[in-house]
Amino acid sequence: MSVGPKENSSASAADSNCANPKFGNRNRVQSYVTPALKAQLEREAEERTMSLSQLVEYIIKHRAVPDISARQNFLDLLRINADIARLGNLFDEALKDPVQMHHHIEMRTLLHELRELQGVLKARAREIKL
Image (cartoon, rainbow, N blue to C red; front, side, top):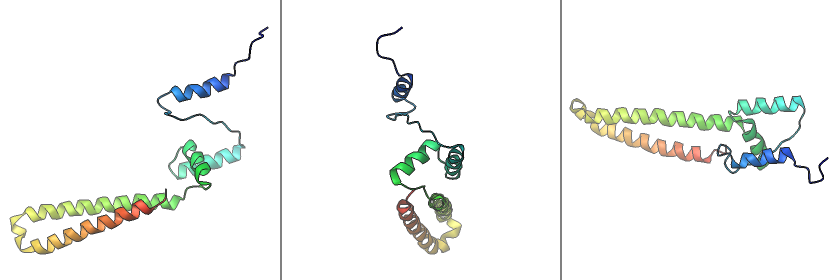
């Protein structure tokens, strides 16, 4: 029979997570929920391409579930920006072609407009709350 204080094995397991570089400066928090709620949380996390931990942390910090459309809008803006960058690169290449000399003014104007549009897209992307 042991007379000393009883060691809490779950507390030491949680403390060991802090020392693990994989978790950084984070602590484990455990909760018990119904199977239906767990399934719902897992579904919502998967829809938002988040881990279950990230979703729960977001809900607690923001008191709301992240908007799926905001994330999709952000990704769409990134894709559009990448397409514009590729188009701009094609214009850059065309400007180097001596055969296209008679179109240089128009191409430079379009290239300038594409760069301005990229700036607008980047600003809009920064405004989206993920």
